[in-house]
Amino acid sequence: MADLANVCLTGRMTRDAKSRQAGNYTVTEFGLAVNGWRKDSVSFFNVEAWGKLGEVILQYGVKGKQLAVNGEIRIDTWEKDGEKQRKTVIEAKNVTLLGSKDAERPKVA
Image (tube, rainbow, N blue to C red; front, side, top):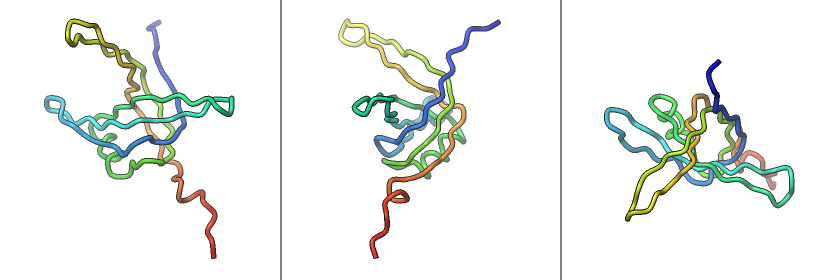
């Protein structure tokens, strides 16, 4: 059996989605904040969505938008100024658009 590094997260976008070119592909990047079970516990994740999935996120993904993300976790490593750098990234395979902050605010008459 193959090893797995799957992850399922539900949280809110910490910034508007932005895209960049990676060779022949377009990758969309955004941050996701996920509240923990403790009131003061929040985890922050860097998320990438490639191709068509990324295009949908780019169109609808704005800061505060609630998302459910299923994907694979990976650690990117590189060297900068002679020091090894590491970054944990969630590569989204499936994203469900949920709510927005504005949709959850009570309307004042």
